[in-house]
Image 1 (tube, rainbow over the protein chains, first blue to last red):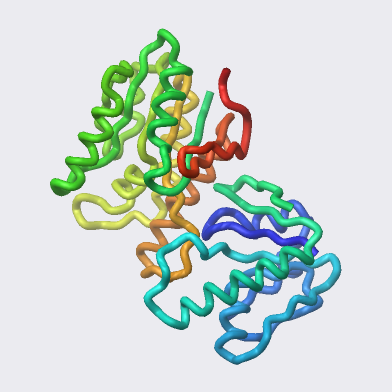
Image 2 (image 1 turned 120 degrees about the vertical axis):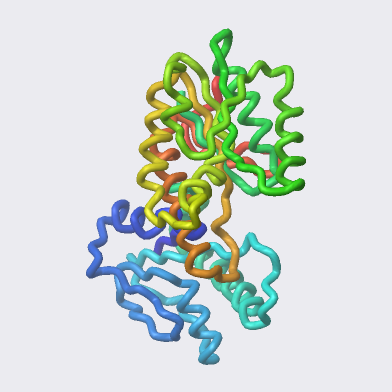
Length: 119
Length: 178
């Protein structure tokens, strides 16, 4: 499994597709529900998936296809959110990404369209 | 050489940009492209801070709220420091007449790259505003997207890309000039 993270609009999905040769049809786009396709080649929007899991009271999965490319937005550099639900999301999603990153072969962080391998 | 600098606010981006521009310019002319249109006392105080930090570094200041190509005209051999892409994109998107251009990154990127390619050196400063958990309204999200697309065009064309974090430099592309 490979993880790609970065802020909003930094080119995460473009890089995932280009670097790993993934077509749009191979991308599962998460919505704010606990629904996910564990077999998908690329899972985009982990932040929405985890938010959905919290709302539905489900533990988010850490098991994906061995060649899965997982894409999540970094949401950790702002002021502590006023909204309690968003605060909880930020915390749980942060811990989730740490666990996920430890299971991934590579972790790449996108900065203004440029990839930086951090694992 | 094209340099692109971004990072959080108050981390030392402008100081680094000034020092790099001075170094790259050598004996050549150096221009500071000022993009901020002051709206209140706070803005004027910020501008004064930046001005005094630049004093003695030999920059000629060019006021440029929007029209980048006009300020590049006739100064092709120079070194340009543009601070900031953030303010420029904001000026280009939110017009004086109240209209909003939600595709302004196309024009912003092409004019900024035009400035970069037509000059000896250029240094661009932007702000990294993309990593918080709270959602914004549609217009702010649209602005963040336009700024990010402009940033990415500049970072893609740049020889040197630096993220500044508490005065430290994280180099994403290229190497520091000697």
